[in-house]
Image (tube, rainbow, N blue to C red; front, side):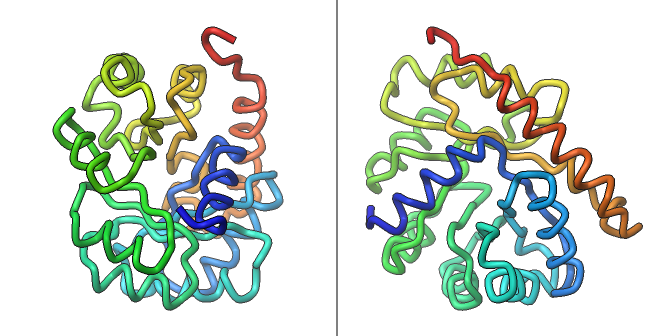
Length: 219
């Protein structure tokens, strides 16, 4: 991993929470980025599920360099190229594709592929990765699954996503194998649609406070 990619991974670990953002354009992207930063969490994983996602990432990368912006729901090598072109500094995928991982590695941008089975984790290790997204974490069994996977894979770090919220955030972050947790509860689409940036900031502050209070098991 390049020094730049390593730095980004370290920033994600320091943040402890990765907001998963769904927006469709530059204006909303900038508003959400500002609300997250105001709440003390200058990180945004903008999903590539909308037509204007690339515009949002480009605007945040250009106008809010203080915010670590990445692209989520990356499922093709072509999307890797597009996301990197507009300024995404990290990439997240719902599953594991060797083509997608290798293209990200070609660009020197860290990628968190989704894993759901031990075989997925072994495939990630074969590609030189030790940081993966556990998805969908809630459906797979939540913190208990992280613990179960950590036993045979002690060097792997996880970013559980899917079903993570304020009520169970601490359960995940208390686990030594959890690098950070991904979630959308502080940036729900209804809040974005309503332009309720103040509520996004309030929920973000709450998440930051929760993360800061988390003791790590065994510490």
